[in-house]
Image 1 (cartoon, helix red, strand yellow):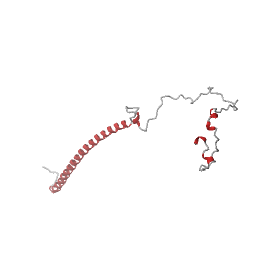
Image 2 (image 1 turned 90 degrees about the vertical axis):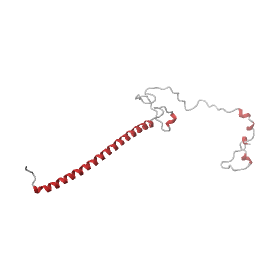
Image 3 (image 1 turned 180 degrees about the horizontal axis):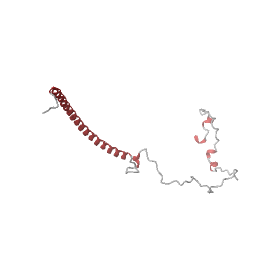
Image 4 (image 1 turned 90 degrees about the horizontal axis):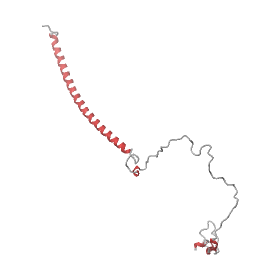
Length: 161
């Protein structure tokens, strides 16, 4: 039987084999630790994915609730608060300018002349027989002299007595 190794190479081969076995055991332990870590991270990832799904569903429900007002739900108009949606017209623009169109004569009143034809003055007839106006009225107080106590300025209006 022929051997590939000579007898003097045998101790170095044994040392190399022991080193290889030791490295293999070390790698096996590292792989086991990494496998356990991967399993733990997978479980954590699945839990977080479930939590994300729940939060997204809750966010969607809250956004729908936030977008509700009296127009798109059964809520009363008083619950809209101060921020009410702007009214939107269903009318389409016609392309015409607003107001009377060109060529329209109009049906307004005619302008009057600058000078009136006749001026008629109307005075009340009922006050001529009123007993308050028979009393001789005193002159009103001079402007800015409101603290005056003279008898002529104290009762200048006949109805203030």
